[in-house]
Length: 186
Image 1 (cartoon, rainbow, N blue to C red):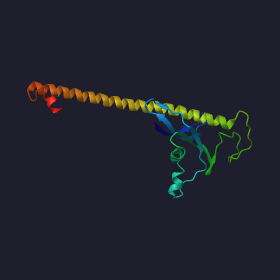
Image 2: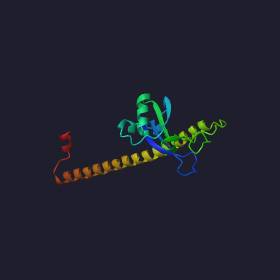
Image 3: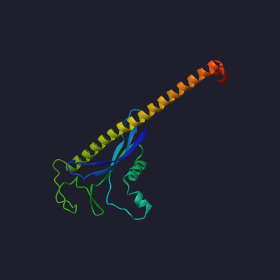
Image 4: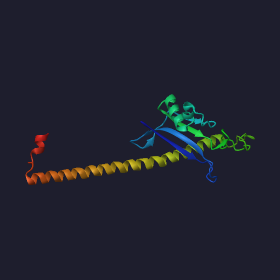
């Protein structure tokens, strides 16, 4: 079992340019079958307010979504999938998750919440669905490159073996080595 890690920009409303959540993911996958594995738990962490430029290396490291996902995997175990979601909008340093509460003031405070249609749950499902789609696309791209490199190496190996065989036959024809030479070497 290996882990696949990556960061995505996910838009719940493709018609609005620039309104994207950043999602860092650390997922269990099988390189042999090129599929995600079933985790024991999916942990979804919503990163809070921005904290940059403090000069404190610990705070800076814990402000990075990818580092947070690695830390959560180390705490929850390697059988967990971890999703770290950053807000698409900030009011100064404060995170505003407007995708989960559709009715907000200009400062990001909720005006009201209408639970009909489960907007928060629907938003989480949509975010993870879009992330899975990007992972699938990424897997196909990654394994296509990996497979192409493997094929290139295999072809290079085939070319080298072919040249060595030709060289061996030339040496035999010229009498430099006899045909039983390889048995003496082994």
